[in-house]
Length: 181
Figure 1 (tube, rainbow, N blue to C red):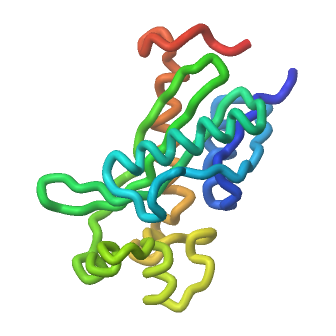
Figure 2 (cartoon, rainbow, N blue to C red):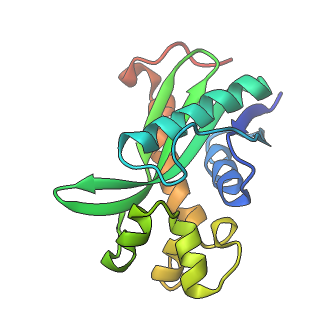
Figure 3 (spheres, helix red, strand yellow):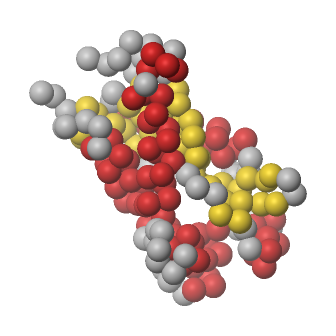
């Protein structure tokens, strides 16, 4: 049986490993291909920019790799009822043209860093500066720090990816095109 090829629009090991975990839960033989992909949104996207960035990464990844699926994950700031939250927006596209989107869990943005976010800084860079932990974006992420290790960045993204896979696991219910062979 040939491997299901999944191109990830990132070379970040946290994102690649989250994709590997989720697809391996449903497919016996999975080949995950990290692909450098541009989100074409600001480095700290907000609201719909976050979704657009994930979709852009997924489409570029599948196009570059010629894979069965392309996956994009974009961390961003969402606003709801006057409050601000961070989430990982996920997009999965397949070679048939189907697109699924969803998010990881959301966590509220601390008021103490909002000025830095508004000034254009990324959450990961702010967290590195505050904690002194280098490469936090390729490790536990801000959520790992703030939950004291209970949830890390990979687990947060995996949550969103599992949700994003729901339409592919229930194609008829969601009206997706015929399953891949």
